[in-house]
Image (cartoon, rainbow, N blue to C red; front, side, top):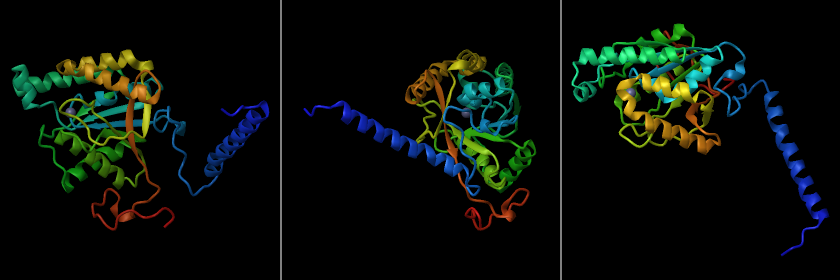
Length: 287
Ligand SMILES: [Zn+2]
C-alpha cells in the first residue's frame, strides 16, 4: 500500500480546492449572461420561489382527489403565502367507485366534491370542478381552446399536472391539456409533471424526476388533507410509502418528485392563445 504523506494529502486537497473553485465560478458566469434563462431554483426550493413574488400556483388534475399526488408541495406553497388553485376536470362521477361503494353516481360525485373541498381548505387551496365526464375526457382542438380560456386569465406562475404516461386516460388527458396550454402561453409559466404513487393500477412509466420538494415539514397536513378524501383513504399507505421512497432518494424523510419541462425556445406569435393555428413548431432562442 502506498504511504500517504502529509505533503501528498496537502497536494491532493489543494487540487480539490482548485477544482471546486473553478466549478463554483461556472454558475456565476452563466448567470451574468443575459441570453440565458433565469437559473432554476435550488433543488430543495419550491418551484419558482426564487422569483421572490407572490406566486399563482395551479394544479391541473382530472379527478377531485388527484391533487393529493402533490398535496405536500401545495401545502408548502400556501404556508409561504402563495395562492393555490386546484382544477378537477371531472366532478367526481366515477362509475367504478360508485359500484364499489354501492352509491348512485350523483351521490358519489357530491361526496367526492365535498371531501375534496374539505381537504383543499385544510391546505389553504381553492378547488373548482369542471364538467368533463369521468373516463371520457377529450383531447382535441375544442378542448384545448376551452382549457386555454379557463387557464390563461389565471396567469399562473407554476402549473403542476399529471404525468403523460400512466394508466388512467383522464390523467393523461389532463397532463396533455396543461402541456398544450403551456405551449400556447409561450411557455411563460413553470410546468411540472407529478407522479401518481407507483405499485398499483395508476403506475406511472418512465418517470425520472428532475426536481424534488421536501414535504416533511407539512407531513401531518399532507396526511390529513389526503384522508379528508375519505373515499380514497385506502390509498394513503401507498402515497406515504412513495413519499418516503422519494425522500430516501433525495436525502430527506419524505419528498414529492416532479419532472420539469424546460426549454429556452420561443413560440411563434401566431400559435399563442387565443389563436389556434398550430404552425411551424418552436423557434430557437434569439430567432
Ligand atoms: Zn385520478
